[in-house]
Length: 194
Image 1 (cartoon, rainbow, N blue to C red):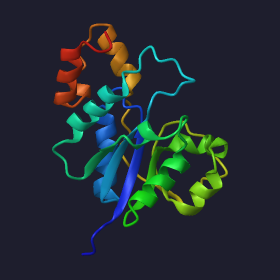
Image 2: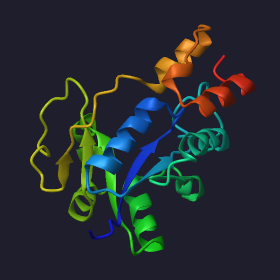
Image 3: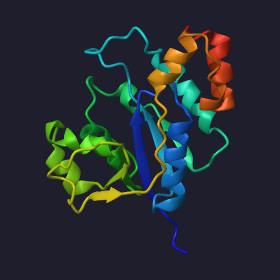
């Protein structure tokens, strides 16, 4: 069997990383031709409110805690060091130059196609990289649906969001089963999102 060298990039603020993220990553690593999934932690966007966004290093630490026992997964803080705002095409180009033996692909929710035409250099993105989509409910058809670079997956639909978890913690709910155990302990010990 040939060694897989294709790596999927799952971008996000991971505020916090939760079991839904890990289920998607696990599906991509086991049921597609991706051999690895990298969690690319996005820095704070200066145009967005920061009131609920933890510092970059805390979100990266939680990702590392969540994936530390799984060799299929890796974390990346590459965008912390790049000019702001960071654009996906620039990050992909940089990673491709840094890791020329890897073939990178983008992992995204099915709803990303509705705004893809607004992305920087989206034509180059579609020409040079495959995009692995996981299902999202209620997505409208787009002109990109049948593009040859788009790969639809049957990843389980997991309706958990980081905002749901943050809201639950703020309301004093026990959210431990929505998160990896080590991440839950980290959040609890640090009194985050309260």
